[in-house]
Each structure stands twice: as structure tokens, then as C-alpha cells.
Length: 198
Image (tube, rainbow, N blue to C red; front, side, top):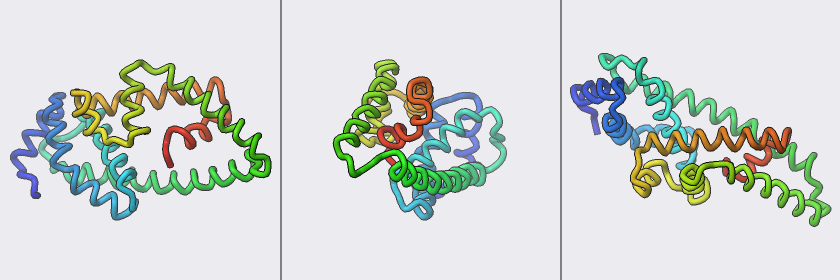
């Protein structure tokens, strides 16, 4: 579906002025084509949706710097492209990290010790989750445990997509800070095992 330039111009003006409904309309207008674009490179609906949602979170955060007189498509596609490149690089690094952690940190010949280690990690992660507010934890679990999209969560809780994005971003920062204090070098391992679902 082609975006009407006049409609887009009006939505961009609204976006720059902080109008959430304009943001949500742009989000809906571009969602299908951008996820399809991301899927061609990532081969994963989950990763493609995360890239799209992250890109639009950036759009909202930087809305004051957007020029409503310029086409939006080149701007958002550039953001998506950069997110895809970063994610692909990150996946490669995290795959390598997982392999190192498995080979160096976990002795699979000792099953009981391995289970105890996993239980310790899970306990730390649950304690980190308990530091979130009730709303943050609910949104975080809907996203990461039930695998719901930001839009689905927004509709279920009757809040805006942007609010969902902000809660998840804040939750991740809070969890990471807790783990840094209590788990140190194990922070990334625990996030990989229980949070990022990679």
C-alpha cells in the first residue's frame, strides 16, 4: 500500500509535535513493509519485529529532529538497515559467546552441578525481575515470556505502543543494573539464558 504524501506530511508534523496518534498511524502504515524488508535479511519474524519496534522507538525519541518536509521512507529504512546490520553482528558475537560459555563455564559431564548452576542463574534473574514495578514486570513478561508483540501488549493493556516500548527499555536497563551488581561477569550469560531468548 502506497503512503499518500500529504497524509504522511501531516502525520510527520503531528509526530514532531509529540502527537502519539500520529506516531501510531505511521507505525501501522510502515509495519508490514518494514518487517517484510527485515525478514529478507534476518529470516526470523521475531527478530524482524524487534528491529521494527526498536526503530520506531528511535523515531519517537528523536522526533524533534525529523524534517516533516522530507520523505519519511528513506529515513526509516536507513534506521532499519542499521539495526539489521547491528543485530546480525550481535548474533554472530553472541553465538560465539554462548559456545565459549558452554565449553569453559559449564561442565556437562557433571549433570547435578550443571543444574545447580542453572538454578542459581535463574534465581538471580528472578530477583532482578522482582525489582521492576508491577506494570513493568507484566509488560516485560508478556513480551519475553509470552512472545507478544508490542502492539498486542498495548491493545491488551489499553496503553500506547510507545508506552510499552518505554517500559521494556526501562525494564532491561533495571535488570542489567541489578545483575551487574550481583552477578558481575555473568550478567550477559544470564541475560542470554533467561531474557533475550536468542
